[in-house]
Image 1: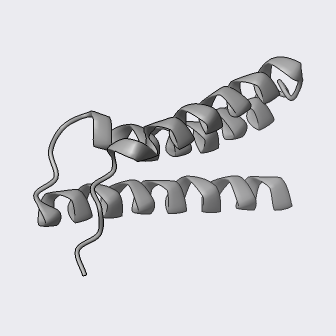
Image 2 (image 1 turned 30 degrees about the horizontal axis):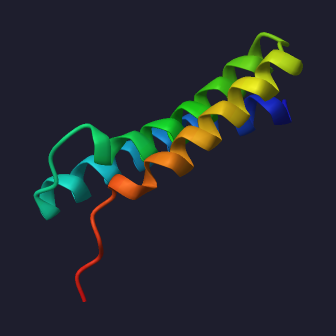
Length: 85
């Protein structure tokens, strides 16, 4: 029962965070795909882990994909706009 509840909570918070990031990007006037690649990689990490848990696919391939997405997300941080102070 607990894994089902945690999966539902993860899906709900993932959806809320995606909506929040989209609204924040629109409010700041940020356009372009390069600056969105970091959050996309991080959201894909959550989705891949959730799917791997649901389909019992926790293994080396899952870890490799997560590490690859983490490195890609870190690489594309250079395209994030600088914060305005």
